[in-house]
Image (cartoon, rainbow, N blue to C red; front, side, top):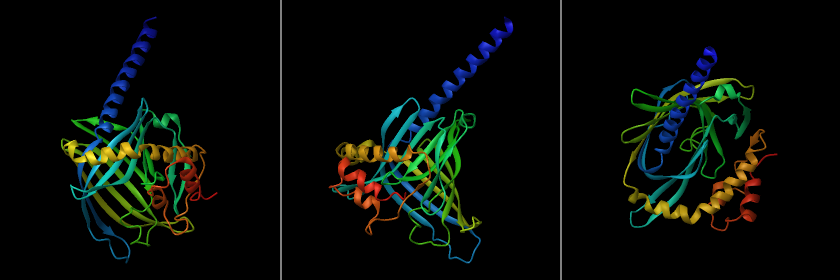
Length: 296
């Protein structure tokens, strides 16, 4: 009887600790929502080929991150860029990040605009969160699963995962075709930091990997008054139904749980160029154009 009680209380203690940690995880993830002034900084630190290194990249932006969905095991955050003058701002739908607790299904980037479906073991993702990052048109970008860490007053999540080339290099570099992203999301007293240690890798037709260069990225998200992002809030309220249709179509595609390959363009236009047009605003117009970009 005594042994049974010890086992019972041990299990109870573990459940309580896991529950407390999960609450901390959720709080950390949701703290990435809000209005932020961002500083993007990227520098190629080492080059291993004769290719011309990329120039240092620096830029600034104002961005609003909206919590668009939440349940016990899922958090979805949509990022919106605010550009133009303060008097006449324009809103650009930016990237999206979804966080899934103890998720076993991943789309892992391969090369040539393809993602392999990977089924992970439940034991391997225990207490972990998957971050799924999506393009501006809600097509896939990269995904990875790791544990949020809360120690010594710090909260951070680290993961290494393959990804397509960053948009800032997609049209400038042809000597590599994959980025192995080392991502660290750390919550800070000013907002949060996206710390990156990336490898630029070329994979040939035989599957041979060559590291072309290393890159350091530091993106500082500094929280500012939500009033600055009011135009983005209003834009999202006006356009959220359209993008819910887009996400729903992509969810149907992802639910097939098989390799996904996308076309780069259709009739010389990118998918986002179609979806950013006002006349693509319902299932009858949105679903068929997304299908045009799927390679079957």
